[in-house]
Length: 387
Image (cartoon, rainbow, N blue to C red; front, side):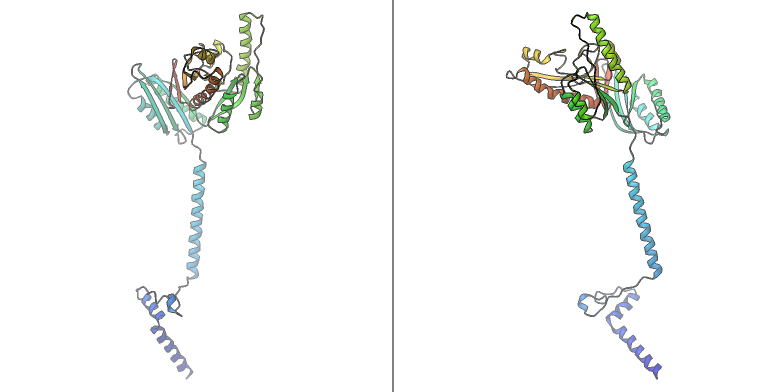
């Protein structure tokens, strides 16, 4: 009797479950038909309860392993991105000067491609009248087949030399990961010196400035302010000295300059209003890497006191010129120039003040182009790939 009562109660529950909406939804789901919103226990259903399938322990374990693998994958991807961001490209710049001929561009590009280098930027200029060709190639050698060691770079230079022999090229190769070391020579005027040091600190000029040299001690505080060694190399003065003796004094001072340039391994020299005429021998040794700022629009008013002479002449524009030095005073290859208008109302002091702004901007552009290897010198002219 007990078994019969139990079986009867079990049959009643089974029949009720079949007739109830939950039971209908479950059977419909088992038959492959998606349950309706009512059978899933919508808020309007009152006491109807939604059906939830509990995952088995094995499924829960599989889900945990999958989520752990995904987290590990995401971590590896983030690490890969960080490594890529930290990877510093190895870049170099090749400057070419040669007679104009067919195939020069193809030969230089094919040579770099053959070495596994990637050309990032290229610029070129040809002079049909003179039969000359100039080119600047900026490339990445991170994936160079020979590697990026010193021995590999020697191999890269050998490959460049092989192309240069075919086209009678003059070429130079510089590397971006080796910033140029620049020495600043000044006298008493500080506007160009301050501008150079501030631009260097703000990364506008990519270089190192290990020392400042002056024939006066007036600007020592500037070197101390920026933490740069300041060397005072005065010029000996003797009113009764003969011209030969004065030249001897100059050569003694220049010998000290040469010693410092060699000691600090200097690549570039800038004359930031250095008011001394350098000897011919010094100019010949450093003419391709020494930049002077002259406070006039050359070739007008070369030499000293150009503003005073411009005022006496009554000119309507004044300018500034950045150029490489030569043995001829203020006659070297011009890198950059700029002018500003003046009027009859401007005094010599006004012209000096306006000219200083020009001197700063012109000198900074010239230095930037030289440091980025954008200037090619040919005879007494320059090709500037900076405009």
